[in-house]
Amino acid sequence: MRWRKSSPPPAAVSTAGISQQYDLGQCRTHRFGLPRSRWEGLEGRAFWVTGAATGYGRAISMALAAAGGYVILTGRRLGMLEQVLQDLHSLGVDTSRCFPVPADITDEHSVNQAVLQIGGRKWSLMGLVNNAAVPEPPSDGPPLASLDLRAWRQLFDTNVTGQWLVCKAALPLLSASESWRVLFMTSEAGWADTPGVGPYNVTKAALNSLGFSFAAECAAAYPNCDLQVNVLVPGEARTQMNRGSSLSPFAVVPMALALLSHPPGGPNGRFFHRDGRHLEFGFSPRHDRSLLVPPD
Image (cartoon, rainbow, N blue to C red; front, side):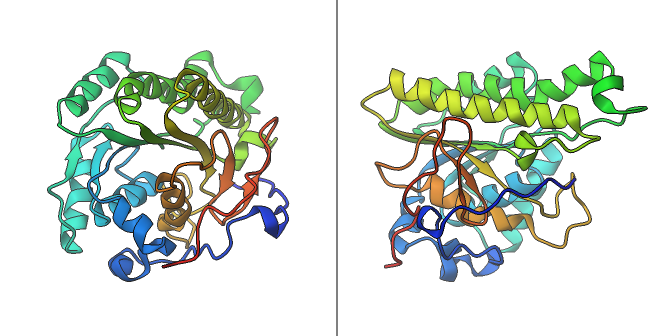
């Protein structure tokens, strides 16, 4: 899927120096562009990643594990989650802090059972990455005019409702900590009108609003917490939705880690692109400073 590109903002409101070509195998050297203190600060922190078996979710999960974080990997199929652990092990990454927790995010009971497993550990949940998504199903004509109601509901169940169910269920675990991060993985489809994928566009527009609104509600409900809830456009890479791309899904990792590792006083309710751009969306202005400090 290809979306109409948004124009880059002025350099003053972007995070410069973001590389999209890092190799996980060399992460202890390059740290995905993070300052050493930020990279080391991820060690021992717990993060829950949905859609963790493939694509961007797999890449972010593996990077967090390489940094020494506790990583809860959720997807529908246990075997695929276990394959991620095998891939990490083959790279020499300690997987003792990685925990596959299969769940169907479209099923509230399944999500709640996953949260019970996560909450049973003796850690504080530092972050949540809402990454699970499905592409638009095929239709017999222009999809907004021809997609049947069942397929429409299935698309929204994963791309919007499931994200909400996960956030709602995880919030008690997140808010138990004084500092936490939530990341919504969206798409430029959320502000596109690309013919042929209208229903998918609508789900991502709704996800943008969910992320923006969830950030505002959390800030109002937990005024004394250092919370940062943001939305990230991962762009196009070699995922199940875009198998023809030559770019690794690890391209999203530098910006994802920059947001998940951000110190207090960082952005909340803002939109970003994986290439370092800070985006303006609706009533959310561009974040006005770099997400990174000079490397130490």
